[in-house]
Length: 163
Image 1 (cartoon, rainbow, N blue to C red):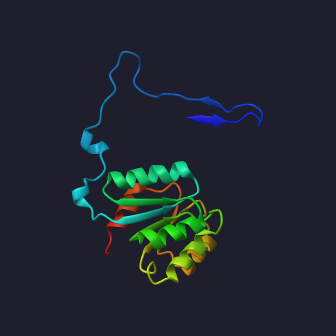
Image 2 (cartoon, rainbow, N blue to C red):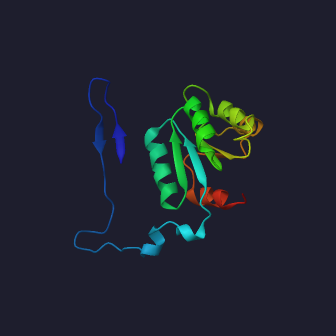
Image 3 (tube, rainbow, N blue to C red):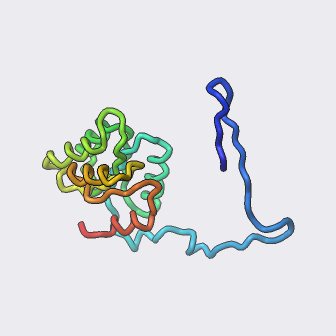
């Protein structure tokens, strides 16, 4: 889908194209097993806090994580993410870096400096992808720095590791 905004006073224009078989042909349907995420029995359920200011992206990621068997909490700002972590006590925190209120790096430092959250696995999920951004993530306490858009197979691999 292509989205373009003409001006602040005019609504956005949406154009979409569908690609598929020619008229009269039947579209191939992949086997259901290819469409479904890994069954919950194949993963260790984790308590995952998603801190992301794009609420649609946060909800989509949260829905996916719940679908594959995790318990999920969402927060949309840095300060609300820190507070949610203190209440929810996550195993894993998936955190954007460009958050309102405080940066994801500041969130990581706050969580690492508090005993109840210092053991959580911190994963940055962000549009910031320079070497300097990655260095700052490591210094702040993130174990992994993923650049958007993320590969869910990579995320599942990270979530399946250890405690």
